Length: 171
Image (cartoon, rainbow, N blue to C red; front, side, top):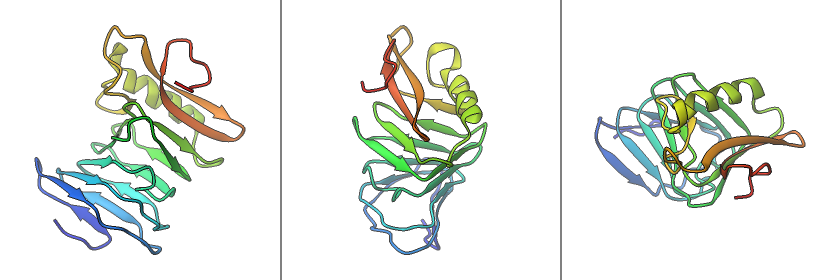
């Protein structure tokens, strides 16, 4: 694993990371491994996931900044019903976000609604919510009454796992 404003690791490796990050640096995830962030961060430069998987186990692990998930990379929420707040969200067509049972909020001006819709359609993957790319949930099995939805609240965006018919995404 290397740290030069980025974290990387070999394919198949998982590293639990309790590093408290602060300052103005942008944090990057490279390499085919999995990095598990377990503590809050206060850095302001945002997070870029270029390769592998970044697992978020603390609601403030991404410090409320921008998140950019590139093609072939993934971010997975492991927060229970917690909410990750972001200032902006960029998700490449072949990038993946797994909200599991949690939620993501994105601040006004930090998202493109048409792109979010297309990433949800890709993540739906015919109903199993396990698309290779897009926004999905490992907690929404085929045949369940669960789905991933989005809602614009004021000028902010909320993405969450919800029961069929749950129009306000409150669980």
